[in-house]
Image (cartoon, rainbow, N blue to C red; front, side, top):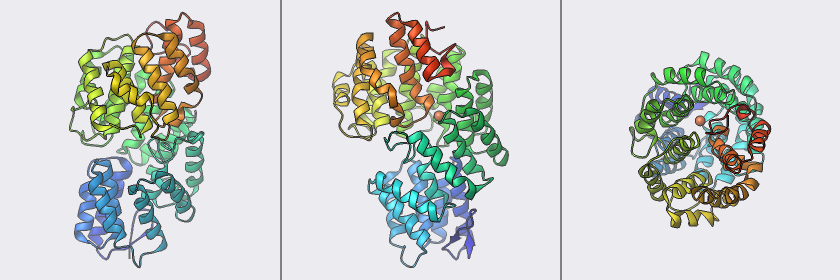
Length: 427
Ligand SMILES: [Fe+2]
């Protein structure tokens, strides 16, 4: 019997199908381009290979082909008879996911990894800031993510993928120094892992290492396929650092090369296109740049097209920003009254906050945003992404002439910004 790289038996008699599956899993775990092709090859070679269909589904999800992913999960489910308990549980979790049951899927992942921790295509669903814990909307979800990866650590040891997701948890729980050490080890084992380069960038961001971070990431990205899932988001990190260093030529090169709607090869997920584009334009305005209205209108139109109804709260919070800046009052009003989504209770005040910011009503914006600051981690995403809120809150204080309070807030909440923040008028 063939096995995957984590010693799990594979229910296929075809060595070539098993090999293609292992290759596909590595592409998925590293967010490198080629996962769909490898998994399609695995199931072409052995159409009865049930977990091959799940691998194919996972790769298709990353390629934003949800219809294709659903069909692949259905094919796996139709082949689950006679499989091991692990394989049936593995398939069941993806059925839950495809049925729009993230809460049940998250709980099922927790149960699954108790028996089979080294089953990464299941284990990874609860990892990372966009995962089932990340987007749970639950209070304390950052700590839950660290508890989750810490519990898995003994089962994985020195594994490049696991170390990279554990380092993410450390980074998002205020341990960027330790995260960087763990991530360096992950990169030593496999330098091509985009999840590792990504959160090495986060750790450096958290440490305020702008020059070192920019140099590292610009260099790492020269070897990363532009069709890779994280290319757009890594470009966002590179553009943020370019902005901090006042290099607007590089900033716009990144934005127009794969961050903004309709740019690049189109391989970024819509949630990344919307959130990265809106955040970057606003971060540029926070830094004192002027953004042409057409830029905001393009992001607002994209949000309307791809996220017409409230439901994905992290996306909704960014859509509201784009609508406010583009002057689309109707779309914004819908979000200011959102009831759907894992953090709709936070989307509503943030949408009202952006509305107030757009009309330069700083007192109104401060009033709307202040209650959200206590636990905006419930939105999901990374701390670096949610600095959008931290910096906007500080901006309100600055505009109201309360600079001391802004500085104290930074020192308390985001010490990396205590001395200097990428916010015009703060230093
Ligand atoms: Fe990031």
